[in-house]
Length: 159
Image 1: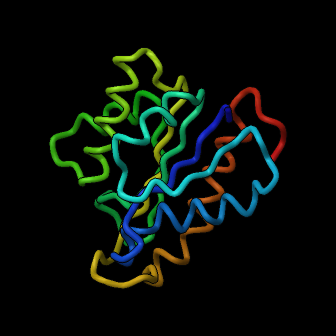
Image 2: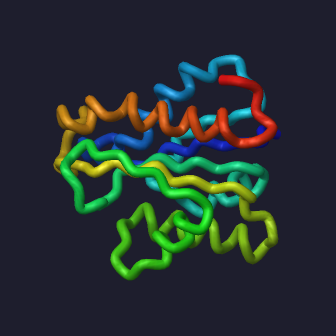
């Protein structure tokens, strides 16, 4: 079982909504052959992911989020910041799903010790399989932030 999970969530048919999945694919290329990190396409997030999330020590979620910033802006949230963010009233469908999955893990006393959420401000959520230009240009930044977190967390070999 991997000690860390990178979970890209989003709908690949809704332009920038799929940014988390696109970034996870970039990360998977960087981590090819590593057994200590699992990278998954979580789609639109469902309760079926809870046992996978619960079995990890460290969790990084990548998702398109309303950050109130220019399109392509990337922000990271760590541990208590993730919890505070998920408690706010206005959440996207993915954030509600993430909140529920983490709450189930918490109730089962199996919530990952370290949690991060790397969000990117979308420009469009219209039908389409490609991200808009500002979001596509920021996917590498999103990936580097996640890889940096993995490298900084204890117990990981150098990335």
